[in-house]
Amino acid sequence: MGKFTTTIKAALKNKVILFLFTRYATYLIHFINSLFIAVYLGPYYLGIWGFISLITQYMNHLSFGISDATTAIISVHRDDEVYAKKVIGTSITMLIGLSVIAFLLFTANEIFNIDLGSKYNFSTYAPIVVLIGVLGYFNTLLSSIFRVYGRLFEIAFQQTVFPLLILFAIIFFKKSNLLWALVGANFSAFLLAFVLYLIKSPVKIKPIFSFRLFKRIQLKGWHLFVYNTSFFFIIISTRSFVSGFYSVKDFGYFTFAFSLANVMLLLLHAFSYLIFPKLLNRFASSSNSQNSEMLEKLRDAYVTTSHLLIHVAILFFPLFLLLFPQYEIASEAFKLIALSIVLYTNSFGYSGLLIAKGYEKKLGILSFSALIINVIIAFLLIKLLNVPFTHVIIATMVSYFIYVFMLGLLGRKMLKLNISVAAVIKDIYPIRLLVPYIFSLGLVLFSAPNYFFSLSLILFLTLNFKVLLKLKDIVNAIILNPNFINI
Image 1 (cartoon, rainbow, N blue to C red):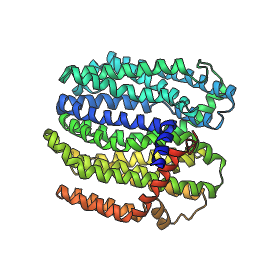
Image 2 (spheres, rainbow, N blue to C red; image 1 turned 30 degrees about the vertical axis):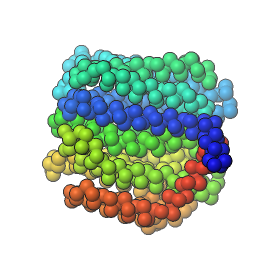
Image 3 (cartoon, helix red, strand yellow; image 1 turned 90 degrees about the vertical axis):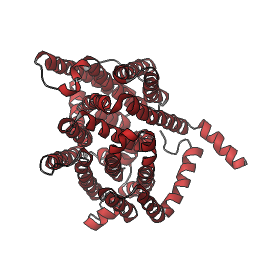
Image 4 (cartoon, rainbow, N blue to C red; image 1 turned 90 degrees about the horizontal axis):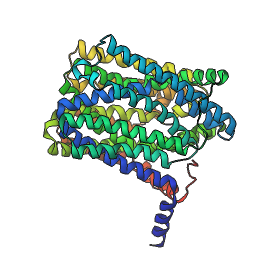
């Protein structure tokens, strides 16, 4: 009993645990919101909301890597406050210029009547959406700065205020009124977070311009932009194909399935988000042998937990259909989306290692190639095979599989490890994860009854029993030692 009490007290004093607890509570609200939004909007209006979200995601990722480059630079030079201020100030100036371009592009869309989302009546929401996108540019940069300096409260506020305002909108509005309320809640959340970041900034925030830093940020940022944007555009392009070639209702079903599948992995994203700056610092300063050892431990925990969550989610998804029978058509899409997005977690650690070692250009080429593969396969699936909207995500599954394999190959080559096909697959797609994965995929493609997926979970638990036992030690280390990940 005494040990249990000590553990609880340590957890309550641990800012890492408190941050993760806040994130998980937020994800729970987000998950509940997704369900009620699906019910109160219905498939048609959910399709419109999905398109609005898609446009904001496009804006968020078309930031030319400015925030990513700033994070990478100040993570390594955080102790040099003068230099960090100059980097941040130059980044602010660059984002101001980018915001002006965004406003001009949306203005051109209205003046020249460009057909952007006409079937979704997007022009009605365009003015406030561009404001959300611009605030997103700055909030992404500012949250990265706070993350590097270990300031978690403000980040937690940004990530919590949005689902809370969405919940408020859900309570008081329905149908088309709810759609407007969701857009307003989105804008309000971004604005409140922006103001808080400015007030509580750990360094003085003011726009400056240094041509030397501009070149460094843009050079590093361009490669990171190509890498991050191409990677994120893999799934965004798939959603774009569904929104463009299928009905608004079909896109609503796809949005419902994607939202629920994605929220499963958000649970682990909070942890990876927290340790990313420190990982860059560690990878940059450690030897190959030290990095290999660190990668093995982190990947065993992160990747195994990710796959466990997805197998559990697929098994219990039919319970949600009992509550929301109008979305039963989204069942197959959910399973395939879940199995697709979990593949990316197999690359955990290697992308950070390569960024820390200056391999941004190669990462960019790799992710851009994967994006092209995704676009080609999705187009062929739709135009030649005429697949239903539920199967378009197979293009992303194939793209991710190739991308993650090549990323592992590049990472192992940099670490001077065995790069044979067998060695890379054993590392990136270990048998204990690959066998249950392929089994579940086969059950989905052959439309097996839902209870068959319990066999996938049993198979997974059997093959990963020893690894799952080790997770207990990692959890205890995080709780008892606030400096375990040294943020």
